[in-house]
Structures are given as structure tokens and as C-alpha cells.
Image (cartoon, rainbow, N blue to C red; front, side, top):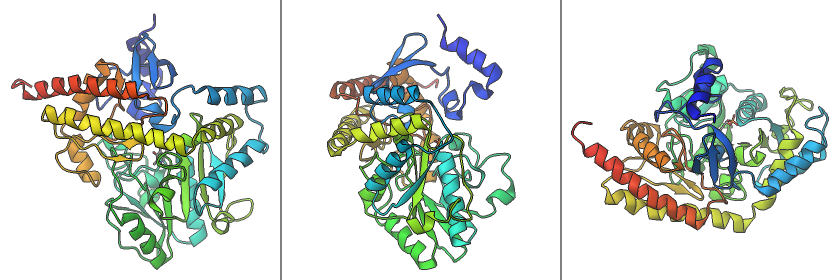
Length: 427
Ligand SMILES: *Cc1c(COP(=O)(O)O)cnc(C)c1O
């Protein structure tokens, strides 16, 4: 039998850190990553046959749970007709129609192959449309790994304990201004675009403070800057129309990813017709992609969105709410100070005595090392949370009430173990 250790050792020889995305290397939680052999619904199995109740769900890409039969069938059927053509397809048009129909104010989209590409292209579009150069982003928000947007990024870049990345020139970030989350920044007329995660989900989960998103809308309007909602996580997850619908604040530019590809590589960015018409071939802003609008990804995306009606959102939110409600006393019982913020079906876990509202506070909570201990205690018990303190938990539609209850029972044992370890004088 192949073991996780073996695969990791082999991976380390040929892939930096043994992984293709840094958080997967388990550097901030320690130990060997589990190598997934297969997954179904709420569960993944590693190559050693161990089963984990999975709250990673590909960082939100799998909202229906893994290997949902409707998605698998759609992908299978699409694959039989060919996997990519370099010519337009009906699937792209249908997915674009579906996205536009769901998100209030959105008129046109273009599909990409990742959220990174979507955010990078959206910023280029905003600069092209406004003729301005400055980009404002918020510390702890993550907009993918393009040069200009990496500064003070959340997610795995935060775990590195660096404010950006080597290899990004000063020139590339000279026009990027980083502001603290949840405070409306002063803008001037050099600002092309203000990029924000309308619900921050890459520094743990941090909800927008009341009035924050509306304040950004007004600040952008005052100086003629565009407002960009990065809905790569929140899109089609926190509500049918994403955070835009949930908060009733309409940005000028959006980006999407994760949920909308049903587990296949996808991204999308969009805006009003007037803004989108700046894109090639209609306008001077260039953007392209060999695999953009890939037929497998559009088929999977359509299949997923087809399952996401109001009932589905009610169920998703119900499970996350149950988890939140039942987990709180479990931590309290063991005197572990914890914040369990929730926005719709998104759940956060910060080991902090006070609410977390920005990146400094998120980092402070992450630095106490309790997340790492809790993560390990849960993983030992067969429950997989994200292997880093800056990610959210993603209960899926496949998580049953029984799964939620089991999570809570196991969390109780894990919290006891963590509390005991923290109390031990030798540690
Ligand atoms: C994941 C994520 C991205 C990047 O998407 P990729 O598909 O990983 O390139 C961008 N923005 C947000 C908010 C994300 O969570």
C-alpha cells in the first residue's frame, strides 16, 4: 500500500514543498499531509484508506460535496464530446447567462480558468476603463497570486509571515495601496479600483462591519473609482446572488471562481455592459485564455448552479448555524476562548477572546498556536479542517445533521485534549 509519507517524500523530490499550492504542505500545522485517493459527499479518503469528514471541500469549490452524481454525469457527458476546442460553445453562453441572472447589477461576464486570472483581469479592466493606476486592497484579503494583488494577502501568504512575495518588483506594487479591513479608506482621484472581499474568508472568516461595504460604495462614487467585489468565495455561496444580494450593495466589477466551476478550474469576472465593452475584441483592454470557458468546467458549473435554489441555501445555512451554535459551548466547557463568526453557510474559527475584525486581530489569534493543536486533534479523530489558521470552514450540502453532531462530539474530545496540553507545565 502507498502511504502518505511515501508520497510526500516522492513529492518533495519533484514538487517544491511536495505540493502545488502552499497551504497543502501542512507547514503551519505540522505533520504529513494526507494524500487524497477519492472523495464522496462530505468525506475524503486518503491513500491509506483513512476517512475524513471534510470541511475543506477544495476551499469552497465543492458546495454540493464531493463527486455529486449530477456534476459527475455532466462532466462525463461533456468529456465524451471533447474536452476543449478553442472555439465558443453553448455551455459558455448558458453559464454566463446563469451567472448574470443571479447577481443583481451584473450585465456581462468573461470566463477564465482560475480566480487569480479573474481578479488580475478585473483590475486590468478597471484600470483600462478609468484610465487610472492606483489599486486599493485590504490587508488580509486574498485576490489570487498576481503580482499587484499579493501585497498583504491572506490565506497561505499570511502563513508565510511575510507581507508579500519575493519576485514581485517594487514597480509591480507601486500602485497598490493596502488599507485595514473594515475601515473605509480615504480615496482620491488617482484610484482606479477598490478591491474587497465583501466577506473576508482568507484571514479566517471576518464579516464586513455594518456600513463598511456601503461606505466603500459611497467613497468610490465620490472620486469616480470602481468598486470590485471579489466574490470568488462568497459568490453563489452566501446567497443565490452572492454577497451583492446578501448586503444589497452593488459594486461595479465582480470576480468569481470556486463554486461556479463545480470543482473544475474556472474563474469569471464581470461588470456592466459599458465597463465590459472595454475588453478585447471590443475595446483596448487585452485578456484571453486557451482553456477559458472550458467545456468540462462550464458543464460542471451549470450542473452545480442548477442544484442551488433557495431551499439549498436554507439547508446550507442551517447546517452552518447548527455547527456554530453547538460548537460554542464545547469550547467554553474547556475554557478555550474562541470566536465562531458565521456569514450564511461560511463558518470561521479564531482562537481569540475578542471578535476578529481585521488582519492584525486575525494574525494575533493565529499566532497563539491553538489552531494548530485543535487542527491536529481533529485530524486524529477523522475530521479535516483547513491546514492553516487563515481559512474558513466550508460545510457542504452533503454534510448531514449526523455529520454535524459527530463533528461537535469529536470537537469536544479534541478541545479537552488541547486544553489539557495547554495546561501541562512542560509544554
Ligand atoms: C481562492 C481565491 C482567489 C483565487 O482563486 P484561484 O482559483 O485559487 O486562483 C481569489 N480571491 C478569493 C477571495 C479567493 O478566495
